[in-house]
Image (cartoon, rainbow, N blue to C red; front, top):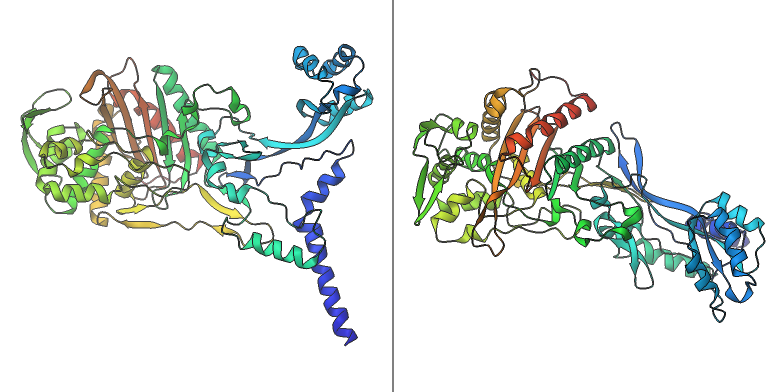
Amino acid sequence: MAYVFLMLFGGILIVRLFFLQVANRNYYKNLADRQYLNTASSEFSRGSIFFTERGGRLISAASLKRGHFLAMNPKMIESPEETFKKISAILPQLDREDFLRKAGKKSDPYEEIAHYLNQDEADKIKNFSLAGIDIYPEAWRFYPGGNLASQVLGFIGFEGNGLAGKYGLEKKYESTLARREVGGRNTNSFFEIFIEAKKKIWSSDGEEGDLVLTIDPQAQLFLDKQIQELLRSYSAESAGGIILEPLSGKILAMSGKPDFNPNDYKSVKDLSTFLNPNVQSVFEMGSIAKPLTLAAALNEGKIIPETTYYDEGSLTINSRKISNFDGKARGTVDMQEVLNQSINTGAVFAMRSLGKEKFRDYMFSYGFGERTGIDLPDEVSGLVTNLNSPREVEYATASFGQGIAVSPIQMATALASLGNGGVLMKPYVVEKIEVPGGKDIVTVPEERHRVIKEETSRTITKMLVTVVDKALLGGTVKLDHYSVAAKTGTAQIREAGGKGYYEDLYFHTFFGYAPAMNPKFLVFLYVNKPLGVNFASHSLTNPFIKIVKFLINYYEIPPDR
């Protein structure tokens, strides 16, 4: 009996030590860190977020930075001016008027006066032995990359009496990243510790852990530079882009400009900057929708690449005239030329070969009108009510990307289905959740459904390769050793109030994937309201080719031709 008791006692002791040394490691570490003065407030703690470089190396995207903050007891400060003079010699950024104002609150025993002090600054101020000046340890959220993927990451801000994730992954994974103390300073019973731990582990709020992202910081940095250059070169209102793996749905990079530095989010004046336009905004995308229309008609056997029709330059449907971008008639042309020359009437021909209802079914099958399910917050579903209209003209304009508005992530995943064998994949940015002391939660690529047959995927891909090799800027950007499938889009922008379109404002888009028959990546780019350039082929081709060449070299992709 005594042996059993000893075994039981030993087991309880081991579990108790586990919770003291592992579950409550941060709590007791914080106690040890308080070598200056104790404060009643608990130190901030939160899980980390990591980017993933090629080869699997993790790079910090969001972490905790530790230091100290400075507080005063105004009652104990005899000479505010002299005290300020000494502290400001160490902290020159300290505001004199604010310091003296707080020092004048003699009925207030506690005022915080400076945060984010490093160890050297804290030690120098401590050595002054200033009456009424106290130093406390603190931790805060730190984003080493600054603006890098800021709209994906989000930031930490005040919510009620505490801090919580705002926007991006910080918001989406709040329950995973937040740290709740288990077995705190008032918990002495082993059974209380066990019950609290059980509540934490099986809580509906989710498992605590760190996020490992699919975002590659090198790809993200290169994409960011190209997007920033677009914004500057064309004085555009906004610009953005996505790089994803068509076969898995994994997001390698996602950029939107203008963006922000989450370390200094309070300086942002326009709150819309915090939103991720790739997920939370919708646009009429223009002619990059034409490959989707033609793929649907190919899939149903209504057309083949050699199918011809007579292009008169325009046509009238429901009393509305629809013209080609240049208004020119080209006579008898085939479906390859519809893509090569981006002919609006050709897209309408393909739509009509399907019929309104079948065309609508395919557009919905591509995911338009519903959320992709990406693991980022507040995703929008798009504006596609025109696809339920009884008027044929709405389907005609949708066939070449006008009249319906979708998000960049919706369009990018739809276009990826053209190159990955015909499957709509669920996009994601979190590769896994690393659970300390537990089993990691790994994201498995998820097929939403099949849209087109593999044979159709190969056919439309070959047609898009021909666009690059022969038509895009006259075939001058063709890569000799790599096949690239791509298409541009130039959409008119709807006027405020939605009654018509601006004559001189456009939304430019570009997508492409490579190597074409076994794509390792898809690049989607857009620029909103660029000035001094009319067509996407002139604004986005060169940035696209630069990104393609970078990705080929960075990921060491072998030639395919």
